[in-house]
Image 1 (cartoon, protein in one colour):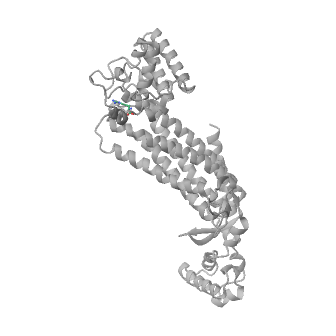
Image 2: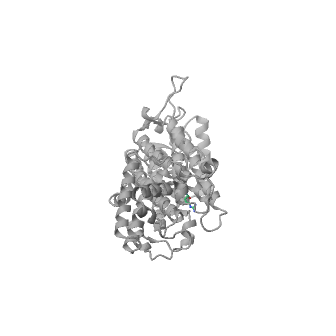
Image 3: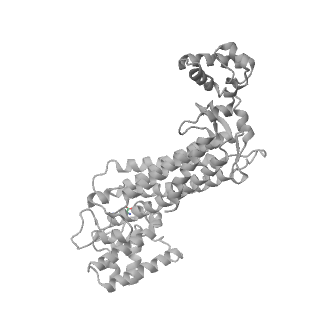
Length: 464
Ligand code: ARG
């Protein structure tokens, strides 16, 4: 059937191998809804412009609506030897409504048709992923608010550095997801232009209205230049990049969850719903979910690099290489969607082991910087001198097998006479954490301020 629709110059039957290589129906059939929606809008416009008759339009609409039902109820399986989803649906339509179906492709090419279908798919999924990101932000904020007083060692180089609170740590990820959300939405705005009506590459002599189809499909406006439009896959690259960046954030969080649930840390316990066992070691509980999220990041990065590579040498306009644009995007979208769903559940269900986290704060002299800051503030020492005196205090604590926060006033004064009475209280880890009250800092009050600020932002998004 597809051979008949679009092979005016081809006299021999295609080789079976060509069909295997060439046909995209096995994977682009997931675009059936977008393809039908695009055809409905195109037919509507053709009728409005007097290019097809009202009768033909009505038959096309009826036929397309029936095809949608047939696909969704599993009657039309889209498993024939049609070259792609566009051919499959046009062929079925023509079977159903005859000549009216053959008029649908007036002023249209598969080049603008695929650009439209794929863009609609990307736009729809951009919105869906953005919604899931908001749900993850809501959950992270809840965990953050609940744990704004729970201390853990903040790290650099994976070495204990300064005391922070767990809420603050969660708010760091909430901030990343906010940027991810904004990145998706900015791509949505930038790419919300209608490709249909560009035809093969040069526009069409028919008196079409691209404004009508654009309005009907919810785009901001028609694209500016048809040659660009049929060769443009930036919108697909953008969703791939946005997914890769988001998955990189998910992967870093996953990495921390894996570390924190190891017995060396014991800071969090993932719920049994999100852990698996070992087939040989009955005692084991493995963090497979965060490991998979971390692993899947490699896979989405591959999809991004693959499409960048496909596109890099192509002359304008459409080239069949571009059919390679879809599977990676479908895969990344599926991966991102599932990853966000599972991440949200896992974060909501995990147990924070407060005692273990706080105990870890007694390792590594986390409040050492506070002694240096004290000497700068109270004794007016240059920071570098204060830094060296503090180093001596750390060495003394090490020698005594203590944490710097456990040194007595006498111990501290034996190092430098300018160290006064209030210092011991300052070196307490909680005091140290709460001393970091500069904007965006870790003090509990500042963390709660961050929670409030992001909640305000969320309200404005969720209401829309
Ligand atoms: N299946 C094709 C694709 O996904 C549709 C566009 C084909 N256009 C063409 N002129 N061969 O890219």
